[in-house]
Length: 141
Image (cartoon, rainbow, N blue to C red):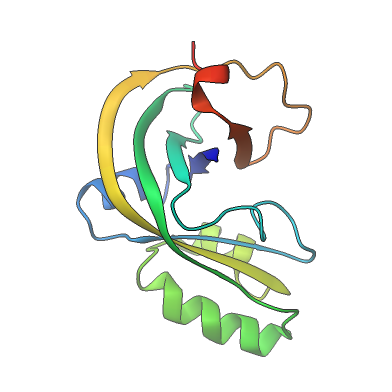
C-alpha cells in the first residue's frame, strides 16, 4: 500500500528525515483518524511538505507501527514525549498531536530523496495530512 504523507514545513520534518535526525512520523487525534491502523510494516510512504507546492520529494518504507488504544491525556503526553525525540516536531506541531486519545507512531526506514513529482488530488474529497493512495502510479503526474 502506498501513502502520501504531508510533513510540517516549519518543523523541518523533511530536512530532519534527510539528515537522519528524524525516524518517526507522529499523528494524534481524538478518534481513530487516518493513518490509525491503516498503515503497516513494508508500506511505502511518499513525502510532501505542507507548504502548498504539492511536490513529492522523498519516499521511505514503514519499518514499524504503534497504534495506541484510547489514552487519557497524561499517558498520551508521556508516550508522545518519548517518541517526539525521534520525530523532532516544533511546539506548534506538538500542540496539534500531543495529549490526543489515539496516537499513530510510524517508524521510517530506507528513506531516500527522489526526483520530485506532483500528484492528482481530484479523487481525494478530504485533503488531510495523510492520504492512502493504493498505488502511487495511479495518482502520479
